[in-house]
Image (cartoon, rainbow, N blue to C red; front, side, top):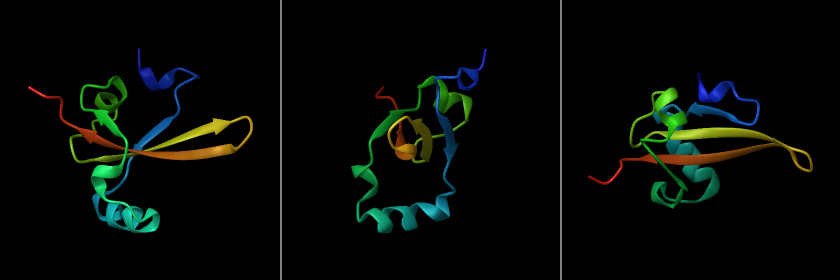
Length: 78
């Protein structure tokens, strides 16, 4: 079963690498300041993201409507 097919799981998509600098500039942050997701996370595996990728997560909120979050995929420590 695909994790993403569950109704409670928000949409996850990989941001193209060339768009990452624009995202960081928009929010005036450095890459390492983004919240992290491990490369072993089931959704990270499903979308085939690798360490260094940034995922855009789009959720529906009953109070705020559609909200967008960004997460940096990091490698699991050996």
